Amino acid sequence: MKKVKVGLIGLGNRGGMYYDYAINHELCEVVAIVDFKLKQQLERVGNPKIQYTFDNTDDFFAANIDLDLLVISSMDKYHYDDAKRGILHGYHLLLEKPIACTYDQVVEISNLAKEHNKKVVVCHVLRYTMFYKEIKRLIDEGVLGEIININATENVAYWHQCHSYVRGNWHNMKETAPQILTKCSHDFDIVTWLMNKKPSIVSSFGNLNFFKKENKPANSTNQCHDCPLGYNCDFNAYKFYLSNRDWLRPFMGNALTDENIDKYLKSSNFGHCVFDMDNDTVDHQVVNIQFEDKTTASLTMNAFSRYCYRDIKVFGTKGDLVGDFEKNLIHVNLYNYKDEAFDIDIKKLTSDFSGHGGGDAIMFKELVDYLLYDKKTTSLTTLEESVVSHKMAFLSEESRLEDGMPKNIE
Image (cartoon, rainbow, N blue to C red; front, side, top):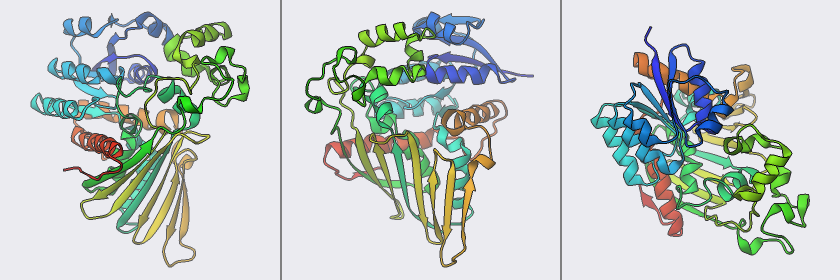
């Protein structure tokens, strides 16, 4: 039986997960791994016996290895180059979001994939979850009537904002891309998928209000290890990482002792004061979307929540629903009938909530079926759809920088 020969660029948090899916799939064979922290990352996943391993992409691509699928989960700024070279080498791609850090590069990758007849699936994993599939089913079956408005919220959580967008890899837009793209391309994709209409206009407002130098507490220092505020500061690095060690595993490997964490925090941005970084990403942003038929949607990204979760409200001509992705509950209200309300408990429909509510595992399984049997489900994201959601994000950032000026998507 034919197997999908898989190569992976990037064996960090996301890449390590796809590696697990691939080695545990009976129709996949992991042939090559590329990571610039190769020894550390191989140790992290148990030192597997892989035919080809590389610590840089130049050597990998020069080797011209026979692969069917290249998984790209490198840092955002490398996606464009890795994807372009992968397509030119004849590989199908599973590409982590964003496709690239500029819209012109996104379009170039899309055109290149068409030209070379390559299947490129972007990791818009929320589509594959049972939670969003149920909402999609209710909409498509007409339970809510015609959909007039969707309100989606991405509650990033203060600790996730600090880890990723203040101290971490996405803290500076010159090194990556706008946060509304890197964090919310999922959400643009979900909203347009649920609406099943062409978006026509976006406008956006947002700013970096809190995590900046003028809000630095009096008597605080630039490093958490010697700050007199200690654990009295909600954003103290030791307070978070000593209780959430796995967040440092992609950077430190498996040696997550108190002593090693202390050394790492003292020598990296992750131990730096969140009010004294060079971060320039927003900590809140709202986007308004108008579709071709004048129906609307709104998306809110907000760093100021205790928990990291998404919620969604869908309003139609026959009813509305409220969904909480973290609790995996959907409440439906139908009009004019006092008793016509019901709840859908997603926990009764599936038991796998690993990796984005179970979406990661389902996406990988459906991707393998797509490659082997050309079987395409309603959830599987086309590259063309991903280009649209990326364009919405780029235009939203343009609008934000122009004080909410509406931007035409066409």
